[in-house]
Image 1: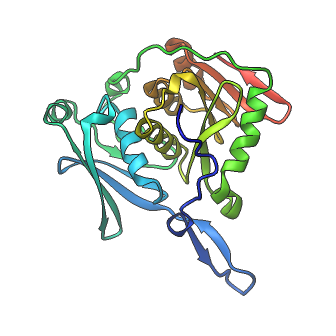
Image 2: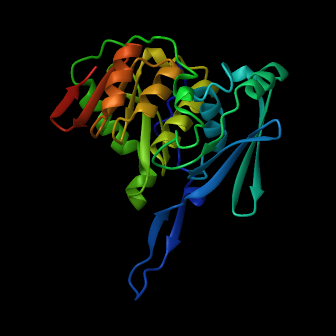
Length: 263
């Protein structure tokens, strides 16, 4: 197991910005959204729109979820660099991984709503596939308990109302780790990276998201090795299809008093 993270203090100085409404009134906090470029050994790979907090987790999780690396040890270092108009996450990977990336170039035009926008062809959609996964056995009331835990863990969202949350939970529903971002895919990448940095085994728990269940959330969850994804909103058809193919248990509409299992 690993240290409980749900009570960690959020990095509000980077994630939130205080603004004064036009015409007066009390100041309000809004979620920060910045372009974040990811480079690997000096080569541009992706530009995402993200909240600039937990960026080392984001870099590691994104690299694992996209198949740039297969294990944490293959990411040698990450430098967070200020650039005009945004930030750069400069990843340095092993020489073997660098060669594989050159053979499979994927350039993403990042969006908070879709991480597949930059694929160069439909054939690339199935280019990196996770191994089949297996869902943990959930205790009675686990999803409802996890839902309450995610709400409590989203301290930044409680202040601004603009951030998605991703949580890793034990089979009894206890939230062990949570990350937030303006983009739901980014929040999950940060969670995956945090789990990897702690040498946790994602298959021993499940992922809960504050968002709808999209194809890419299913894919990223399976790439991380977790066998169950629960989301607070609706699923897409491709998410259900992909979950069934990978053996991932997919729950949606996880809210107080209800939850629907789709795969």
